[in-house]
Image 1 (cartoon, rainbow, N blue to C red):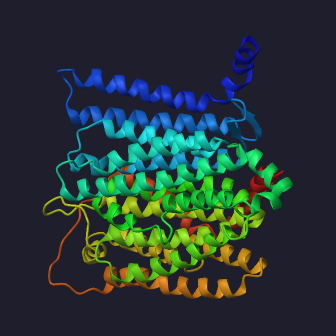
Image 2: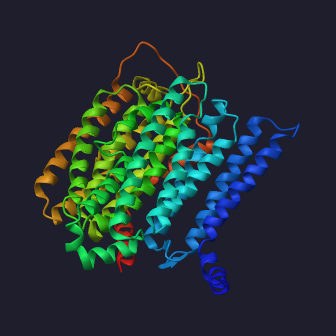
Image 3: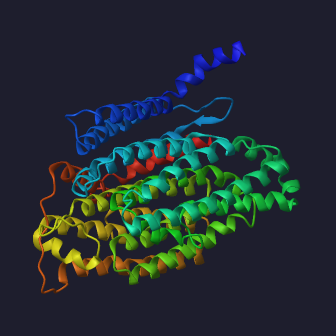
Length: 497
């Protein structure tokens, strides 16, 4: 016991400093909110602003701590945690994207009179759960991380307690999320019952040496299939996508932006880890292929008939998930690089898009944008914002030379390299079909005639900086695409070696 404690203090403690720091930050921010909220000089709005700014600072400092561990490839806590290049890359994306969303959502929360500082703490607790999913190396610990972030997300969906739509979204998310967690846990229990292990590294070793015997076990295959289904549900892939449009539409716009960006990063990182196991089993990996193609089909057709922005984003997210699932089906180094590149560009596009949506407020009543038809007022009241939104929609549709084109193109390349020619043709056709509703938005933005004119308030300086900096990555990606691809290849090679 003494030797184990000494080893923990000498090695494991230093490896777990970023996670310990973030947990400590949540505790301190809770105390800050409670004691500062009782002050006679403070109001609910001031408490929210202080806790939010401190939360952004905590996330940025935590990202620096993760960056300080770059280049590590080692285990901690008795092989329960693995710090490697890929996990640190996704952990940095989780931290920085959450900080960006909190920063861009300041004005939205202020104008919507959200005076509860607890939502910032829920976001930070969800981030801790996502980091557990990204960095841990054992199914049981990963499941604890999934449940931690899921419980926080259920409450965030009900952030507007007096709104019928928000309450309905939280209830639907809770019921279906709990159902998917049961499927995932049942699959893990079957996997453990037929193999006796839960460690991901041990799984790869077991499948490499005893694959023939394991494939004869129907319980093992069923457990692995249920794990794959649970993960596809969390990612929002078809046919386990039915919760996504309703939850996105009913949640507050700030919460929808968090749902659409941050949890997807951790789920895709976890699917990369599990992909090494799933790809070794024929029949289970085909689920990724069919789900990917169906996600492209549903995302392309479902988005055409939408009238609200958040439901359109939900179907767009389903379509993007389809590309990631196809890259995961290819697997290997090329497939993993395609996933990393796609997720990186996808995060920048969604942050930029929601930065614009969260910043738009009508001058007449201070209301936010909900309907697609309201976007025709953007170009008339703010020409630069309209042009910027047009470029962003072109990128999301995959029009060259913007960043969204390169993310889809690399997925097509890895599928062709893996000789999935027919699948590539179908994916290209569905990608073109999915571009229809993005072009429809551009038609509404510039050419929709309406007798009613409305104007929007000026965008705050802080939001303007966030929109411009994230947008420059999308517009100028073609200039520095090769250094990013080379860096991602080296990162994935370090992970596999």
